Structures are given as C-alpha cells and as structure tokens.
Amino acid sequence: MTASTAQTTMSDGTKGLVVRGLTTTFDTTRGLAIAAADVDFDVAPGEVVGLVGESGSGKSVTLRSIMRLIREPGKVSGRVEWGGRDLVAMPAEELRKVRGGEIAMIFQEPMTALNPVLPIGVQIEENLKAHTGLTGSQRRARALELMNIVGIPAAERRLDEYPHQFSGGMRQRAMIAIALACSPKLLLADEPTTALDVTIQDQILKLLLDLRDRLAMSVVLVTHDLGVVAATCDRMAVMYAGRIVETGTVAEVFARPHHPYTRGLLGSVPRSGHSRTMLQSIDGTPPSLTALPQGCAFHPRCSFATEICRTDRPPLDLIGAGRRVACHHHEEVAAAEPIL
Ligand code: SF4
Image (tube, rainbow, N blue to C red; front, top):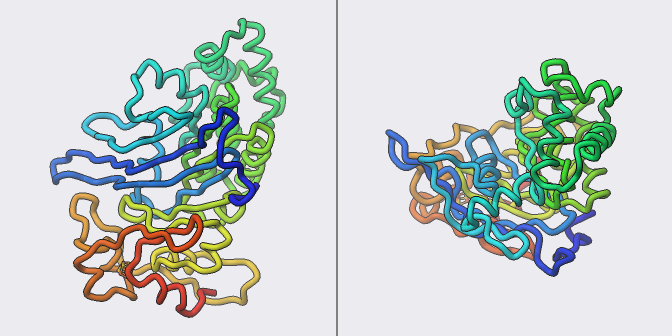
C-alpha cells in the first residue's frame, strides 16, 4: 500500500501514530546531549515509514522514546498519540498493556534481545500470557502458528529450543514471531535485518510486508540502508543530528531530494538502472550531540551552505503535500544536477 492509498484513520476513528515535538535528552558529563529534537511525523494505518540516517542521527532513540524505553538520566517530552491517547503521559500500568499488545518492537540485535535461558516457545507464550486470555494449550498452538508464519522450519521441535540453537536469520524470525504474537497494530522495527546476509534480509523484509498486508499493521522501520527503504517503505523521514530534515514519499525523495544531506546519502549508494559512476561520500563526520553547531547542524559538511546557515536553524517547512524539508536553500538543492 502506498502513502496515497493508505487510510488516514483506524477503525475506531483515530489516526495511526502521530508524533509531535518528541524530544529526548541525556544529562552527560560533557553536558546535555540532545539525541532527538522536535521530531514530528505520522504513520497511517497500514503504512510503512522509514526513519533514515547515519549512526547517532536519532533514529533508534526516536523509536525507543515512542515506546518509553529511555532510561534515566534520559528525559522524553512531546506527544506520541496512539488510539487517541498520549503514550508519553500514559500511566506505566496502562502503557504495559499497550506495549507488546497493540504496539510491538523488533530490536536491532536478536541475540541480546532474546532471553538466552528460556526456550523460544516460552518467550512467545510470555507475550500471549501478558496480553490475551488464551489458555496454556491455546498459547502453545498460537506460538506454533507464529513460528510457521515467520517461516521457521520444524517449528514444533524448535519451540523447545534455546536462542543459541538458532542461526542469526532464525533468531531474527523468532524476534518477529514474539513481536507479532498479539497481532499488533503498530510494529517498530529497529534495523531488523542489519546483521543478516542479503538473502535472509530479503526474506525477512518480504515477510514484514506480507504481514503488514495480512494484519493491516503500520510499521516504522529504522535503517541506514536506502536499498531497504526503496524496497519496503511508502514514506521516509531523513534524520540528522537528532532532527528530521526531510520527509516525503520514497518515490519523491529518491527522485528529487531537497536537502543536501539526503542528496549525500543517495549519492553514496549504488542505484540500479544507472550507468557506472563513482560513489560519493559525505565529507566530515556527524557532530557531537553535546556540541551541535549553531544554525543548521549540517553546515560544516554542506557544500550549499551560506552565512544564514551558520546562524539560523532552518525550520522543517511544508513544501508540498506531506513533503517537508529543513533547508534555507532547498530549491537550489532540488534544482542541482541530479545524482546518478
Ligand atoms: Fe546546507 Fe544551509 Fe541547507 Fe543546512 S540550511 S543543509 S547548511 S544549505
């Protein structure tokens, strides 16, 4: 389903996920680190939105902040509306019912996210026990069904096996089975295929899309891989130094990036259908989150930068339906030679 065909409301009349002004800070010995700042985005029911950027750009922190998984001394403010409720302000008891039930998360590293001393089947059943009224035998049957849905062979036997007996790809599938146990309406996936070889990666992504279609589930997919975004996402939000700097449909952003950072990311990956050219890299490194440059945080690395960029931070302006960019010179960037 594309962004344009995705429904904008859920069956109960509420919107999907609405994130407004989400800000996450950490008090560190080097000062206040602003890991995510004023993050705004929406995810319609059945839509897949990619959060993209380099390491430290704020993608994973944003996902964890939505789920209130930021530990002290981290602080989260802003609004995360889901089903007409604000997850940021929700009492802990109520939030526990939402987590793992309506909203599920797949973590980046399945080996550390899975409990090493519990069989996989028990870990799936734990989620069902917390969020459904199923009996023990019904939970076991559902766990088996989930193992089959995510394509784990010999599922009946493997329900009683431990994470170390699973390969990397199978562990990732097991994580997905746990996440999907209660048929969530929203899946937050943090680099779900990073550690996997391309064949397994392809299978897992196809599986997620298939499940999205079957369960009408919304997905927020965090990745640094633009190939993954092109293959799976309807819309994308590019993050830099904790802020969203560009959003739009995947087709629009890939065809005509308006932010120099997005342009740089696109120039640094091979693209099919184009003649062989040198890949470009983005000069410099991302800034420290405790010492962000004044003005636009990207200005020390930006070939389009002018004086205003060094003093005034550009707002995330609406430049078309669902299309936003934070750049003083976005028209010039969009009109620049295309990146091949
Ligand atoms: Fe570059 Fe200026 Fe745009 Fe920032 S605002 S991305 S420095 S041109």
